[in-house]
Image 1 (cartoon, rainbow over the protein chains, first blue to last red):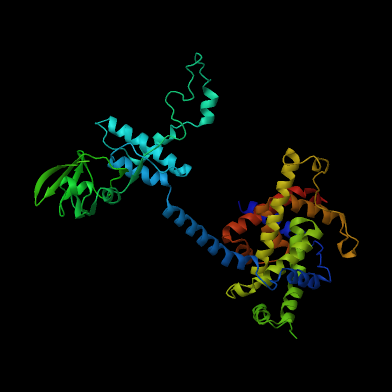
Image 2: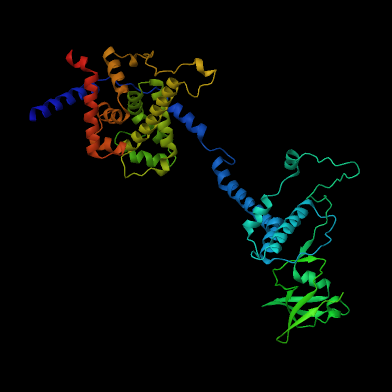
Length: 259
Length: 195
């Protein structure tokens, strides 16, 4: 055992000796000059280096991106904001006259609302939809390009041709517009504020629809046409509700609006 | 201005203060060792000179971050080792790609992998004997994990503790690798020992 170790040590010693005997190479004489040239080449010059750019430009860029994102969020995607409130609060759907100059995005938004509201009203078991469900409804929309690729033009007998295909509305179809309750009720002469359980009437305009029908200051409107309302509800314009359920001095009262 | 009694740390301190001659003294002290060390690892003089220069450039720019609790020789050998390891691995990748033929465009397909330059240079200092060339080839053929400790210990003459510190290994591991590397070299250079 000892001999083996001794032999191994001798071998290692031989190898080490051999390596030590190797001729050493030297560096070129102008190495210092070359090194200084490299250092001068890499030394930071005047102006902004990439580190400075990273240090200042990146935070500024992030800040700008954040501001843009915030503004976009604040302005909001009209579809998302209106969809969720409309779906959750089951607004009243009334045939309406939207502004004819509404931008395309607004028309898309309202069209989406209409589908959701229709679906909501048609199903008593599902009084409300979540935001994701509302998105699903949107996803099922088809574009005119898709339709064109799938469906051929239906040929009708002479004289019975129609430019409107079944199930599709013309482009100028008038969609309802939804506004907050205070804005809509203002049109029938009521100034309201939100309170627990509904909307309290702050003032009633003389000779207005509400005034003529007997709505009084201090009434708390709980429901319109059997649908509860609060500050988050969305009402269609123009308003054509018929029955207001109000609480007057603690007593429930039904007020029928008289056109 | 500086003599041999000036320590490395004193030179670094002076160089930090803007004394260019202190840095020149550091280069003068270590340029031969570092060049020889890298040359024995790569067996390519031009590349060794290039990496040795790069080592000093990095020392220059990292001088403010250098901690004097470590020996400067350990520090500079570690930088040179890292550069050499990167070069060894880069060559290995190039060789692999050359063998597989991957990642070669049509223009490059005609260019063969360039092996390390083993031609003796014009400088008479580099005219090596046939025996030295054989040893150099044997070292070059060693796996990286044995090559570095062997060169540091047996070519550069560092102590085991210094080798361990340069490579960031334990003392036992370092000794084991050096022993194993010597065994491999012995088998590769069997003819030299029988002669």
